[in-house]
Amino acid sequence: MATIDLFSRDEAFNFLKYNLNVKDVEQRLSMDRKNLLDDIATNLQTHLVFNNMRLLSLPQELRQRPSFDEIKSDLKSGIGGLCYNLNVAAYYLLKAIGFDAALAHGTCTSSTKFHDNHVFVYIRNVEKNGDVFLLEAGFGFPTFRVINLDFEKESPIYIDSFIEYKYIKHEGKILRMHRKGELVRGATCNTSDGVNFFLDGWRRFYFADPEQFTNNIEEFYAPFDQVFQNPKASPFHLTFRAVGFPGKKAVMVINDKTLIENDQGELVSTPIEGGDEGILQAVHKYFPVIPQELSRAALANWRASLTS
Image (cartoon, rainbow, N blue to C red; front, top):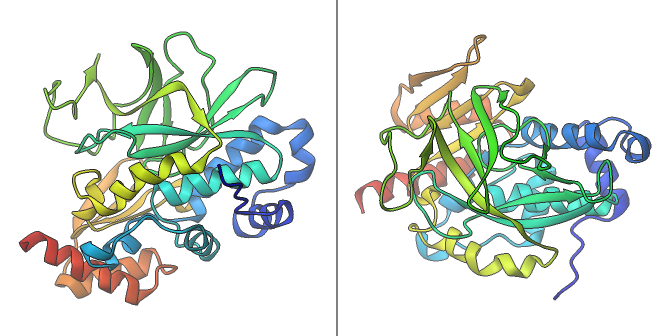
């Protein structure tokens, strides 16, 4: 197992302070650990962009899992990326400042089901020995807190931005469940392909093994080689997407629409006028950290994928 340190301790403190605007990190490590984790999880989402521009900007045959240098560069610039960028970076930030963090495999079932196509973070021994919290900062739905997994059957119900969600324990797995605000439309009942699973009016978005975690990043190479190269492993080869939460309010450009959260916590969908130039202008307006040449290349390849 290779030893990889994406951030030194000083780099992590500086990134949290100056890039993510997390206050008093060093002092809070000893006396305010859970609230500190809440702030880190939240600010990763309010200051960085969940998007697939890097992936789409390359022709299908050249797409690959990002290197650690690429992850770090896009994190520091504010561009962000997909779960492999954002949650892996979160793991290394937490490790660098002294948290007992581990990486966890997950399987998203948004519009496809491919085993281990998601990664997130467990943090242990936060408030007491043996406790476990889950940090999720990288899949385009808000989670403005870390989730205490010390529950018997299900967590409290949370509402962050537009989404109502909870975590449950079901048949030996941890499931993230969505209700109000769920963006995946169409199915209303379980389907045989395993993509759609409903329980008491809630739809599963991903599942994971609560006992399966690791500090070996190499375990994620093979599944994420598939995510970044194989359209059957991830929906992000066939959609054009940028999602942010400035001020904890959702702003999205998805294909040829914007989805903007209103004051009632609802997403308002608006078709983008002006064709491709209109889409690029919307990306630049809402996500100016994304280089225009990157979004232009991504849009061109997304358009080509629709006709191939």
